[in-house]
Image 1: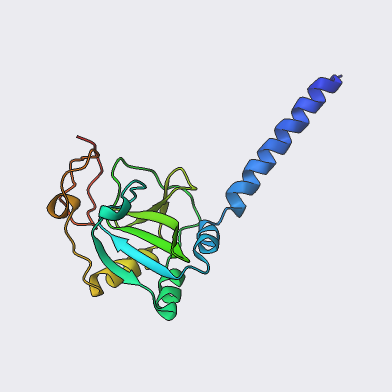
Image 2: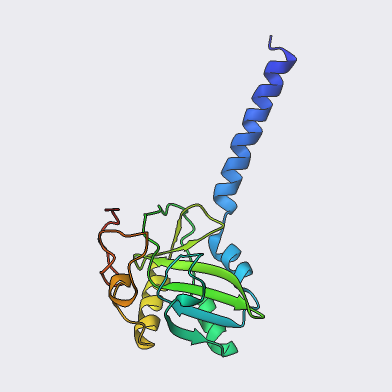
Length: 176
C-alpha cells in the first residue's frame, strides 16, 4: 500500500504532465503575437535585426503608418503551431519593430527568412510557409535591400560568418 506522500507525489507528477501537455497543445504563438501588436500605429523595418540596444543609430528601410497597411502586415504574420524553432547566434535581418503611441511595443528580428525572434519566447518562432513567402515578397516589393549588415553598417560586436549575406540567407548560422 502506498503512503500519503507517495500518492501526493504521483498526483503532482500527473498534474505536471497534464499541464505540460496542455501548454504544448494550447500554445498559439500567432495569437500571443497578435495580442502584442494589437493597436500598434507604426511598423519600422530596419537594419539592426533583433538588437534591443540599437537605439536611434539604426538604418531604417521602411516605415508603415497607414492603418490599413499595418492591419494587412499584421494579419500576414502567422507562426507554425509547433514551437520547434531553434535559436542561432545572429541578430537576424531585417529587424521589424511595432510602435504604439510613439513607444516601441514589440521588437523582432527576421531569422533566416523562416522565423521571427521575439523576446517573450526563448527561441525563434517559425513562420508558416505562406507567411514567410508573404513577408519576403512584401519586403522585396518595398525595396528593403537584400544585403547584409556588413555592407550597410559598421561592424558590431556580434559578428558571424554570414553577416554579409542577404537577409534571406539559408545557410546555417555559425558564430566565428
